[in-house]
Image (cartoon, rainbow, N blue to C red; front, side):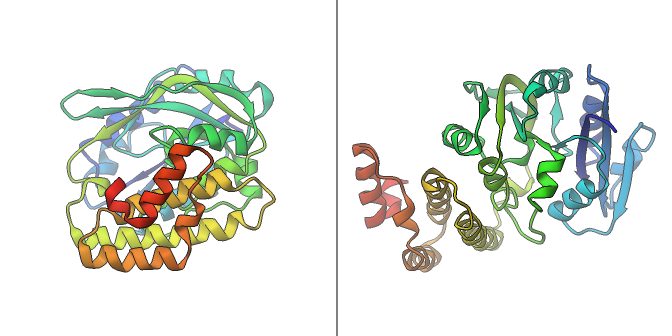
Length: 301
C-alpha cells in the first residue's frame, strides 16, 4: 500500500498536464501512486503523459467531481491528495507532509502560492499548527485566503471513507460543497509551514469565466451547497457558529456579484433561509458588519 495517492482529473489540458505529472513524479519522498482520471479529453492531454509511470483511468466527460470520485475509488494510498492538472507541486511536498504524520491526523494542510502564466508569484503565508480538533482547525483556517479548496490538504483515506464523503457531481463549486465538512469533522488536523502547491492562474479556466449565464449557474450551485452544508452540520454535535458564519458569509459575497434583478432574487432567498442570522456578531466590529450586511450586502462588499 503506498503512503500517498495523488488524484489528478484531466480534461483538455495538453499545454499543462505534463508539467503537473512530472512535478508529482519528481517528489523526494517516493512512496506514492499517481491516479490520472481522463475525463473524456478530446485533445492530446493523455498522449502527453501516457509514457509516464502513472495509472490512467478513462471515462466519458462527466466533470471534475465525477473524476475525483472515481480516483478515490481506485486509490490505494493511506492519504489522498487532489491535484488539478494545470497546477504543479514542489518536490519536497510529500516529504514535508510525511514529517507531520506522527500523530495520525485525519487532515494535513499545506500552503499554497498563486503562479501566473508569466511567472508572477503571490504567496499566502499562514501560521502552522499541530493536533487541533476539526472545530479548532476550522476556526483558524477560515481566516485564510484558501479554505475549501480540495488541493490544500492531504486527507486520510479511512477517515474520508468512514464519513462517506463525496464530491457532488454536475455542479460548480464542488469544493465548497464538501471540504468545509472534511475540515470540521476531523478528529486531528495538522497544518504545516511549507508552500508546496502552485496554483496556476490562467485565462479560460472555470474560475475565470466571464459568461454571466454560467455565473448564474454557479450561484445556484453555491446556494444549494450552502443548504446541504447547513443540513449536514446540524446533524452533528460540533460547535457550529464559525462554520455557519463562514458559509453564510461566502454565500453573501457570491450573490453580490450578480446583476440587480438576480441579486434581488437571491437576496430574498437568503432572507427566507435566515442566512444573515448565521453571521457572527461576537465582537463590536462583527456586530456592525452584520447590521450593514443585513441592510444591504452591497454596501459592505
